Amino acid sequence: MVEISVILPVYNSEDYLEGCLDSLLNQTFKDMEILCIDDGSSDGSPDILKEYEKADNRITVISQENMGVAKTRNKALELINGNYVYFMDSDDFLDRNAFKKLHDNITSNNSDFCIMKAIFVNGDEEYKFPAFDLDKEFEKVNFNRFTFTYKDIKSHVLNDLFAPWLKLYSAGFLKGSEEFTFPEMKSYSDAPFHVKTMLKASRISFVPEYLYYYRENDDSLVHSSSNTINFFKLSDIIENYLRENNFFDEFKDEFDAFRVVKLVYYMGFADSDVYYLKAKDELSNINAASLSIADKDLDKMNIVLDSDNLKECKLALELYDCKRRVKSMQESRSWKVTKPLRKFTSSLK
Image (cartoon, rainbow, N blue to C red; front, side):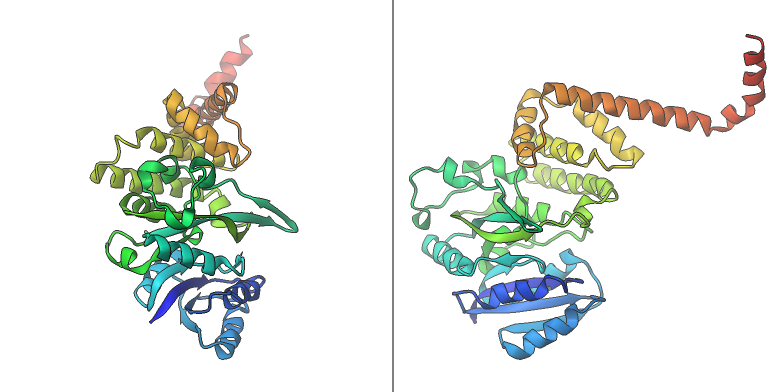
């Protein structure tokens, strides 16, 4: 039995994989196993993993055909031997004291999971991402002797980073419910997992330090236009869960804000009629409470959604809708059939 099981899905990560593995192996906390699941990589990642497996017996490499990160994490959860579980992304890295601080906190608090903070890395630039600023909400607290539930941090359930790499989980907590799996989606599988674990945890704890380094990737699925439609599937999953477990009324404003934040975020590169029509409907129904919550979350992404900008968003969607209707009309059979008549009518003027 080991203390921490690290689950590391790997897919074409050769540029950053060594840095990721080194940050794990060089942790001041040593009692761990690292399950590296090569998810059908076509680059040099498998060779890198084999070399590291030979050099350190804490690393186990499992190779499989490409399944996606959600299915890979679910499979790995069945193989862990640790008392605690940590999900790592293969292009990121950790502060060398991260596991020591997280383990000290989660054990002293006997919490279901422990949250930390993240630094975002973009090339040579780093910035502290304003997520889970719980030290600003709980003042003058010894976080090694302090736990809370979702009721104390309600705004963070649906309107903060969903990433599992921000948390160290108790294996007993995760294995105690069949709900705690990642839905098999191309992206966004983190969100339902985050919401479910937040709502069901009896004790949550927090390390008020920036210990995780996340590399921003503009080419990721999260930033693709195809992901705009995937978001609606995610939204339905979360809404159904909230309703089925009697949380929806409690989180109605937060859920509306969650949808608005994502709709506004994707507005710049969406190219789907379905997206624009749904966005138009959603923005037309937003209330003051939801707008206030959404504004705080968008502020973290340097997006302002005040009343004037909201009007601009709505006008942009109206314009798009008009263009879409005109295009649809021009492509219709009736428009083509009546073309000679329109020419004749025009000649009479």
